[in-house]
Image 1 (spheres, chains in turn blue, orange):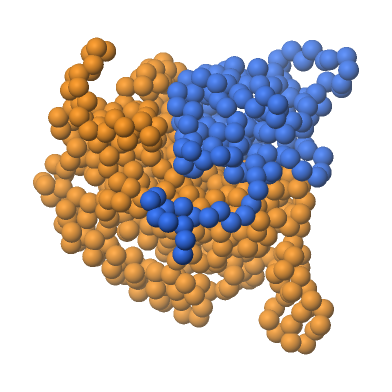
Image 2 (image 1 turned 45 degrees about the vertical axis):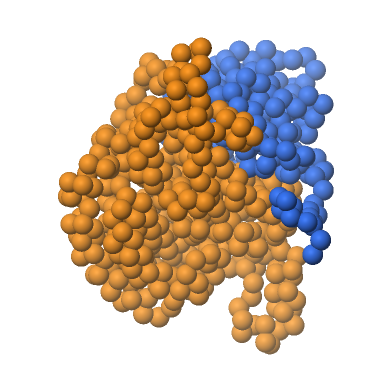
Length: 184
Length: 431
């Protein structure tokens, strides 16, 4: 169950780490705060840094974006494992990228606030995110700016609500058949 | 692994994002526009928009395609999915970690053990739990057998889709041999719930190795029959060679993994490149193709059956003695015999199955090589006995995105060959 060997943090942290006065300077990798989750390297870019960072990583050999998913942290009890300087928001977009040459995997966690639930799309760098981004939109209501086809993918077009949100009411929904009377 | 550089990657990227092969219509638009389309000012000639599926025998379940045709040639297309969506990721948040395996196993129903495996590996990673050697070897054995059944199923459906109807029976027959072994070990032919967090549900039955050796002796001859029936046949080759071609760079940009990526000559297999379980202790080859066409994808799967048999033989020889599941009392229920004599064991057993065990908070992504490509599981735990979020990265879901690009400029008659060669399992696509 060993994951990829993780790149050493020291060697890549050469990027300038202009410490902010308020918070203790977080560890940086590729210029953004980095944390470790069970031995897996997790980057925490802001929404503004996100696309630029993925473009940079793509140029350095992370050809493939394997996974993109959303998480709704509403009602999450414990402290989230975020490096200093990263503000926790309700939603997260989690992106997994893979470097085949040195066999490393990186995970990016982007904080997305509830009040402005949108991020830029990665479609123009990794067309592989087309379906996953549509799924995140469908399930969480997070808009991806610049996505060519921001429509629902799993739920019907006219569906109301985003099922994987934590405040989505679970319950029985009467099954509707076209043109049939609902009386049994 | 072949060399690929940024220039070729960027060239592939600009081809893929230029929107020439994907027909981006919403469901309602597709309905309105279906049928004959008169020439437009934008230079598009006469076209026909046609709907294929979701209830079509060759769409492997409930895949629907909206095709834009110019005569017999496909210009643009779009897979429409969601007909099998049952909210399994949402369900996963309601089930305990012990029940979770029963849920995920129903996603990719042709390779259920891989789903259980990736889920269990993710939970164990969060728990920091080490599975005993025998448990890991059993998992590997079952997964390789499952890879064989999945590929045999592909052989059956691929043959049937292309009109080699006899293949359907042969593929199912060989698959049945292995499923019978699954039944002997797990009690079920599919949806086993056999691999669980902490190990596997039960030890292998007595005489498993002889039973398995008997199966392994039969199958090579049958595979030779497949070769005779299909691989060398000119009709078969005509239908598949040069159809649905994709380059390595395109496959990478579209996130394709598994046989689709390997058919382009790009050798990437998680079993070799990011080994999990005990794959670093067995010998096997990563099968790659050359042309990235339907024939290569077929040939790779056929060769992977042989490779899996090679691995299974090694596992039979190397299977160690010992525990088949972790002895950590937190996650493993007490043995059946203890329950009869100890009240505490009974309570403990009851608690594990009702409340479940608690998993430390954190988030983790684990990936394994399923027959269809990278199968990943992302779990966020909040320290309770249910996952806070459980996401499965289904290879079929991502691989489906290659369809419009594979079908660009292909004939309508080739759609079925191309869909079949992607080998999508809709349960995993829609989850």
